[in-house]
Amino acid sequence: MRLSWLWLSLLSIILIPFPTAAARLLNWQFDPQANRLQIETDTAIQPTAQLVLNPTRVVIDLPGIQLGQPKINQPINETIKAVRLAQFTPDTTRLVIELTEGYSLDPAKITIQGSSRNQWTVKLPQPQLLANQPGSPALTTPADPIPLNVITPLTPPRFNLNNSSAQPVSPPATAGQPLTWLQQRLAGYRKTYPAFQSGMFFLDMDNGNYVDLNGDKIFPAASIIKLPILVAFFQAVDAGKVRLDEKLTLRPELFASGSGEMQFQRPWTQFSAQYTAAQMIIISDNTATNLILKRLGGPGVLNQQFRSWGLKQTVIRNWLPDLSGTNTTTARELVNLLTLLDQGKLLTPSSREKALAILRQTKNRKLLAAGLGPGAVFAHKTGDIGFMLGDAGMIQMPTGKRYMAAVIAKTPYDDPAGWTFMREISKIAYTYFNQSQTGSLP
Image 1 (cartoon, rainbow, N blue to C red):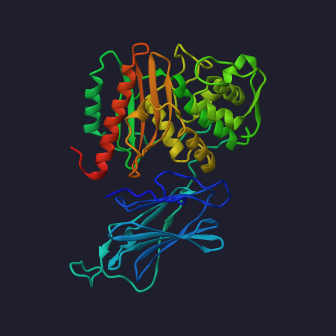
Image 2: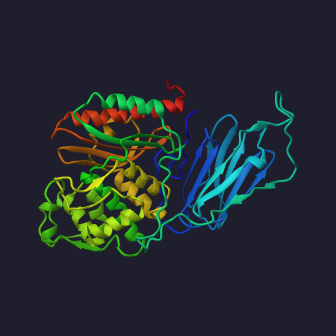
Image 3: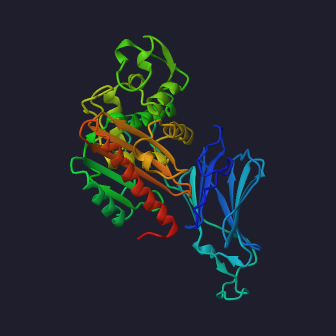
């Protein structure tokens, strides 16, 4: 059964946020395999919910939320007829999960819980045939709507954006079980490249299951270091310390060789902070990175910020281009960072979506991106300094399945086999996760 990702804009499989506005629904998604609805708003809310009969449907109201879109009716499968969305009242958005006629739910097994005040999950039990249907168990339903309990998070997990020393939230990078078959398959492939040293970490975002092959080994970060710098930049934006439209000045000491186009501009040229951050990622501009580093206070300030996120080995020791590889990271820490970003624990919803939109535009498609199937969406950052290749990001498959990947490898200098290694590692993982959707795993 295909995993349906239901988006408010064009119902595409790609996460497309609404334009930034107060009190709006950012996105929602329904997983028919897990019978799980996930909801995200751009502000804290307290949903209400009830189970209504004839036909059976779970009704969730989001008070204070403006939909700003036409009504939506998305078919699901043979037991769950549809998920509907509409503006119920001028200040309330309503989501309805409607079951196929003849099916009902045990209200005691419906859970509605917030991971934060703007992120909520509705988990349904398996729908059951009503007692008057052929072949059904003795399931009966009461006559009146049933209020459903909504579990509010005790404390919001988001960081204090004005305090870089805030206690970090540990990402659940190993909350699940090892993916033994995939790990063995990848380990076997690694042996075909005895001259390479590599570390990799993959995380199934649905259940927390993972692959860890030298995930804690410290490697040169190269341009992958720009990934945590981008997060730090948007965290400063959220804290009001940086404006997206403010001008950054290209001072002579910030020029850097290697990738990028800003190095060819005249000194004292000015660029907007948002444009500079985007160039840092999309074309991996080293000079743009130094402008952002300078604006955020330099390597020492950012290293402290990284540590507050629980990143102990992700360290900036030199300004870019750092061709000797003194800046470091690990595959596991990159996935941990991506997990925190995905869970909304580092950035506001608006800034998180801006960051992901930039990461999706990364131009270098020769590494992990080259091993993905058609239609996959990859928000990622690459790195290459001749003797080291790396790539880390979030993959969304056309089925809606999502996983994270971080692979770093030391190779003989400028060895083109490094690209093949990265591509094939990615292809093995992508094929595995694709088959896990169809039930055709070995």
